[in-house]
Length: 183
Image (cartoon, rainbow, N blue to C red):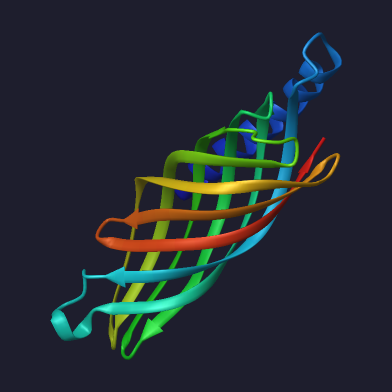
């Protein structure tokens, strides 16, 4: 399943690059492709362990890379890879990563500042263990987020975001900072 999602995401990204370049060189100069990456810090709350004392609650860093297409600096479609890394709390550990597809809508208040909202689907893989007992699972869940985009240069943006991800009964609240390069 993960290989199918990976191939689909790569194919989508490669397909979008020529489309955005064609759209830019044709009559609509407001469609731009972009790539980027960033770091995040998340709070995790996993109630899925064996009993109340074995809940996994932790804070951890994460990283992401993304590519997408931006329409008129208002609407965007984006594909991400997010690595939530390994987190632990006593005997309980979890390692997760995933691919996401999302849509964003921004309100450009000035040419340099635009708050936005996003919603999407996260396709995740997770490995969990409690002492010698371990399990792996995967799935997909919707997520949402809000953020602000600051234009630093003609083709460079700084994005500050808050996102809420859910992996079955595991909640991840992530704040992140990313650099976005438009082409």
